Length: 89
Image (cartoon, rainbow, N blue to C red; front, top):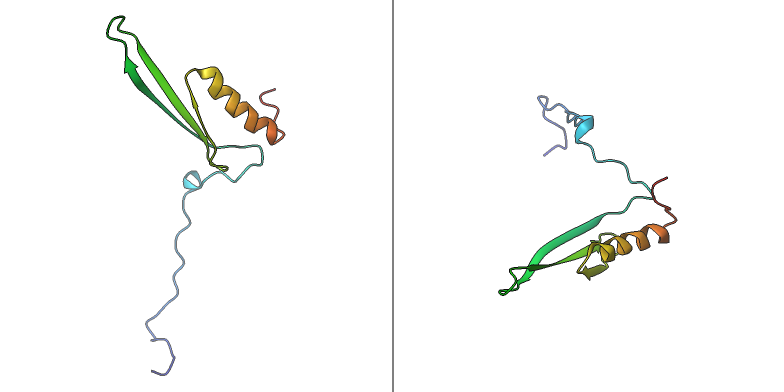
């Protein structure tokens, strides 16, 4: 092989993806969380169900399990405060 390209070879540039398909650029005060909610048990006598949940802070991998939304909100707030985010204004 001589190391030369065949004469029929042309360089092709791939088309740019549409702007709406591009992910948002990283923002310093933005956090990602994964929230899971499930029914853990059902009380046969009252018919009430207990729900549980877990929330994971994606960048750190920290997970908290909770039984009410206040615990979940506290977990999110703690991560936002730690990064210097004060929340909505």
